[in-house]
Image (cartoon, rainbow, N blue to C red; front, side, top):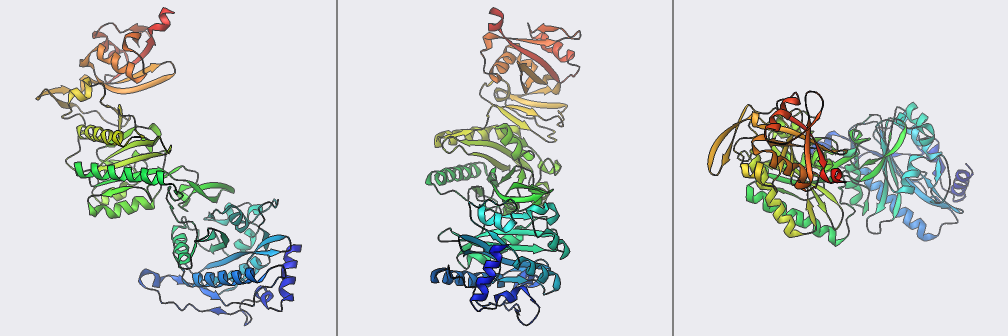
Length: 572
């Protein structure tokens, strides 16, 4: 490239020996400093870097004294950073790419920039020599079809990574062939910023022989070391609120924390925490496609919409659950699974009496829940009208709160406090999805809450929940037994929309019409209900007896399928 020739020409005109970096790194021309820092704890078992000694400064007549001094400062800071790093393996190369003004262009180059090797061998040195033969135009308005990862990272200010460089197309990673030849597989590049000014100062690049499924550890290493030099890069799980700078959002999170603490104290809940959808803030190469990903730097998140609890309000009443809370912060959840995902997608709520009996697919944190004795969990959607942010609040219930009536009381308390806080909308309070093997779910539920109170939540189950053979409820202070024959699952269809809920047929047709009307936001007096009989004819519900007939016609003793029609249509 002509610009590279210009760069090296400028180097030679300055009388320096920086061109020697690209000739023989294992020779005496380029010496490496042996690690000297004393590491303690687990870090003493990991691999520190041999760091390059400083060569003569690159000179370019187009650069003024200030730029040269600034370059020297960054050079020394990055060299200090490299000396503080330790890695999980020896076959690692870390190098810094710096922008330099050459003529009318700003080039990104690694010539004369600090680099470190986990072990000094020909493979790593070969890739380093190849890197010095490259330079990339870093001008924002420069139109270049084939860009390398460092150039993209510097231009966009976003990290880029992959567990295997073969996930790239050759045009997206010009050094791919060299990396494969040098037995380098994992790749990570991070933009480096001045912590005070926020300006971009370069790109730090890591290549490893291992195909790490996650670079969380390495990113944390870089972040910790850079911070000591008043520099920064993106953090792992930087939290969905890392970009929060407005006071309004801070106040919003403070309100959520306050309510979490009040509710957990009132009901003696061991833990309450907040989840949101994690922002897409990294670029990952997967199956030869560059795609936006979340900030977990974990390959398990690729192609998914993730939810994170990092950096969001939580309240721990039982300090024994700190390890569980940390596990939640370190792990992202797929939006399409788990109780949190269900509550978010439905904009409602979800309850499980014993999450330890669920599979890892149904509850990704089940292993940690078993370790820490967590069983009952309840999640509910929360929307902020002011900021338009959506949250999910997750509560873990103590052993004395395993019945659904306690969950209903919890919902009412949340409703009370969030309405008082204003500008918040709690998830659909008329419907609680219940998942998992619940056994005695219907024991001791107030019928005035379950059947006759129009404002109380209804309860639905997923298709893998077993209905108990016998259950009981309290009626006006006295207990009465109701077998499961009384409870049926109603699937109501109005036009193209369908709603499902559990219903006690002893409540009668009038109550059923009220519930259906509420689901579709219709007036009870203006609807009629019909069901399909054994001959596949639509039959109008005209009396309570039809409830039994509809149950029999469905072929399932615990289900009723019905059609809701508007009387207004019939009149017209």
